[in-house]
Image 1 (spheres, helix red, strand yellow):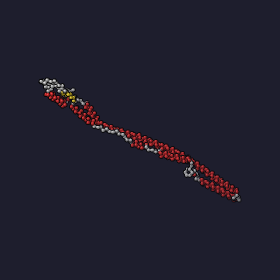
Image 2 (cartoon, rainbow, N blue to C red):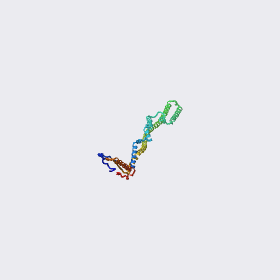
Image 3 (tube, rainbow, N blue to C red):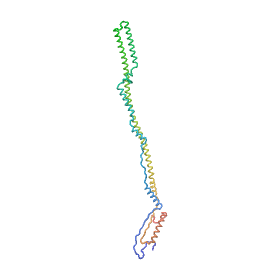
Length: 304
């Protein structure tokens, strides 16, 4: 009778056999298996831990951009020059409307200051002539006569005519000078108004140019600041995902480790007596012990 065989029927009992069960256990080398299990536990804990991701940040407008915004909102650039130009036009129009009666620009202001001297001289000479005419009339015995009166009147008429001629000439000169000054004032005023208008437009153009330059330079500064924020976020993202990358790295190492798989088969058969079953269980336990505690290359039980 085989001690470890599948036993036949017992005496007197007869009886049929029962179907046995068989269990196959496949395991890796103990060192590899323990490391994989530890890696699995670590990965499970890591998966349960929420990831703190950094928020997106947008760079604020630079100081140059803020200055450009302020300048763009400033109104009235060039208005002082335009106001001066309008004033110059008003002055020119006033001069063109007529000569002032008194004061600067008037005809009197251009009169020859020696006009009074000339008039006085004409009167003095005329008076001398009148005196001479009277003396001659006395000598001829005709003083106070009609002839003397006609001569005296004629002499006075000549005096007045000479004064009028001199005054008219001087007035004409003063009028010409005043009109020339008037024309010069009108021309100068219009030219000044035009120049003020150009200056006002140039001031506005310069402001627009300054705003564009500030926006361009400020835009570059904002782009650099945005790039710095992006680089900072990438660094924070790399730090957040570093444990997962390390886990993937360890997974690759574990996958490529050289290993050997062992298979243990245990089972029960029909009609096995208790002693044989216990012996078989002991042999299976011994084989499992040797597989766990001996190198995989020395295990001879079901090696695949």
